[in-house]
Structures are given as structure tokens and as C-alpha cells.
Length: 197
Length: 66
Image 1 (cartoon, chains in turn blue, cyan):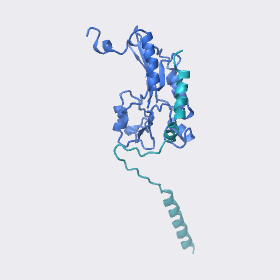
Image 2 (cartoon, helix red, strand yellow):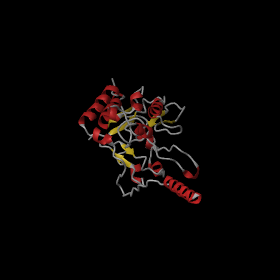
Image 3 (cartoon, chains in turn blue, green):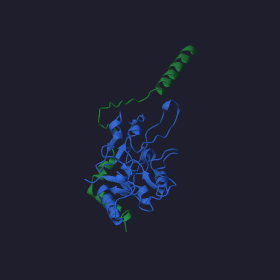
Image 4 (cartoon, chains in turn purple, orange):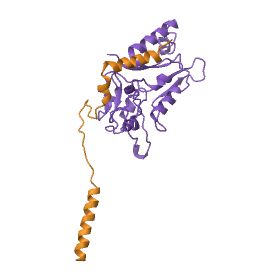
């Protein structure tokens, strides 16, 4: 079965932050919490690259592996979701996640963080019926239940950010790379091990 | 008479106050690797092939390169 995946094409991302704004607007994400963010490498230098990062809905999610109360579950097609009623806000998932996806809405004395919040692939959470008021308040809008894909990707003006069936996403990216006649320049052997290796 | 009335009132007030302190307690006993939260209705709805096809159609409509 195909899995739902995000992919950001660094050759196309223009750092417009449209995805970040779309996400915040769609889910009414509180101030200080960013479910998605755009990271720029070598900002201001010729050849700079940007990528849009959020929860990558890992196949073997480290957040779920370290959660002491097992509040994570994965849908059939690989969307990693969590139950905020079970979450104790310990922050282990934040330390485990390589993408910095888990966010905490409160910053108070004595390390009180509040319940963890993260990208849901626009699939809401386990609260009541799909797209109920409670679900929307806790997890944001459930676009998947409406037959829609994540708004961040659907809003992307350059189609740098793709979200959907992993096989279809991979096909599109493969075609793009072939058209560019080579491999993407940001990631690769030369970047990781220097050009002279 | 007045004293017994006052005692009765005090007892009723105390009971009402104590009742206000009641808090429903439900304990979730965690077991390693087992999700014990509420079930998500999306899981059932999304298991149907129609919903998957709808998402694939939407993807090819909106995100594929032209």
C-alpha cells in the first residue's frame, strides 16, 4: 500500500513561506507554534537553497518510539497522528524528532509546555467525528476526510512542495530530475563528502 | 429549634461543598507499544478504496506537472 508523503523540491522552493501561512491559517495554529517552516541554507549567498519542513510522517517514527504514554498512532497510509488527551507534554518526541516537528503551545515556569502539537497531514485527530468542532479546535481542519490533500502543498505556487501518495510524488520528482539532466545539486555525494572525494 | 436548623443548613452546605470537589477519575494504564486513546473515525472512512482514489485523483489534478 502506498504511503502519504511530503517532498520539497529544493530547486523550486523560492522561500515565499506560502505553505507556512496556509498551514497557520487553515488550522488556526496558535501564536508561537509553527507546524511547518521554511529552512534556507546559505541564505544570501549565490546558490542558496530553501526547503519547507514539517512532520515527515516517518515510517518508523522516532517520536512514537520514545513516547512514554504511546499517544501516537499511524493510519493505513502512513500518516502519523497523536492523541492530545493522552499526551503529557514531556517533550521526548521533540528531542527524538530529526525535523523539529513537535511544537508546544505554552512556555511557562517549571517546564510546563502544554500538549504537543504537530503537522497532521491535514488529517485531524481522534477527537469525535471527522471535522467536528472539538477536532477542529484541538487538531485543526481534517481535509483528508473531505477528500482533499494538505493545503501547504496545494497552495505551493511553484509546486516545490508535493504531498500525496508516495509513489506518485516519487514519479513526479524522478521526471523533474531527468528533465534537469542530472541529479539535484543540493543533496548528493558532492555535498556530503566534498567535491574532491 | 434554631440551633438544629442551623446545624441542618450547615450539613447541607458542607455536603454541597464536598460534592463540588468531586472529580471523575479515569486512569489509563499504559502498556508498551499499545495506543489506548480514542479511536479515529478517519481510519475506517479512509480504508475505503473510493477515498484513496479520490485523493489520488486530486493529487494528479492539482500537483502534477503540466
